[in-house]
Image (cartoon, rainbow over the protein chains, first blue to last red):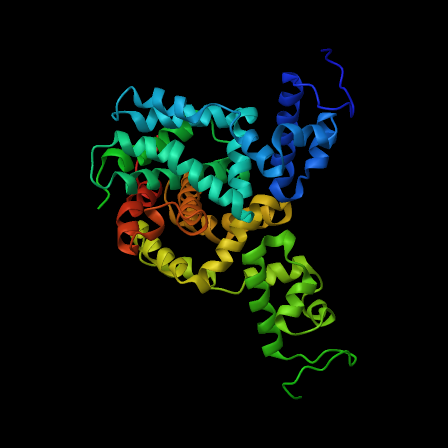
Length: 200
Length: 200
């Protein structure tokens, strides 16, 4: 198998680079245009392959979207590693890790696509809710030793999503331009109180 | 002037009920479909008037959107009334007022339209940023006696927008179904710390 594209010759080659190139193009287009406006055809063109190739790998736009969402840092591994230090100081560790990831535009894009798309597209709204609930908040809740652990986890979710929207999407100043450690110092105590402090 | 619609007869009648009906239809359609997908023509049909009538009042879709945004509680009057009690306890008063307003779906829709639209539409992204910065955060910042008052105000914005997204748009449980006073008790201390507490 060569690395040159094989246009319309039976089954497309199972080239890992092609798949990666399509996913990168998908993340770029979904980020720039949102889920609805980014077409499978445009994404194929952006990746330099034909649409049939994209369908071969991902079936349809929803499948492509899901695959693009799974690409960045594995959230379960990330949360597990943060939780391994225990809940004391977890607010600060969580914030520092997330702000560092999101400040890097490449890693930011998946979360940003999800949040943007969820606002206007019911399918990705459900996806975001499930992704956040299962992959992030469920794991955090499991680490908290309190009967209201799920409420606490969803409160953390509200501050983290709000930080994504305010700093990275709507870009409210001066929060958008504040240096990472300023954001960590300001927001980590909020997350820590939702984790282990008084919320009643 | 009668209350019956006057189809295509020179200048449309300046009927206040017609204008209000168009604005109500616009809020409904923008909420359900987002800014991009709701057409001026569909909104006119929903309101039972022709598109020329809508253009007569609001010029174009952006003008209609702006007018629809201005309709609910006047944010400046709301914030001014909350601030008149001083910054002590402002976190709790602000949260209680907002959660009460947002829980009432009618009033919620304008904020929800703005947040949803801002994610996928650059024009309304700019609108949301300007609306939040000027109408809400600017007034809060002016009431805070600290050199970092603008950072504090934008941190408050991050928690409030996050609460809107998590409770009303993405509906992360159990936050989405928590009773209002539970939300106020949990989130007010966050807002109060951003207002008057230590953030460094």
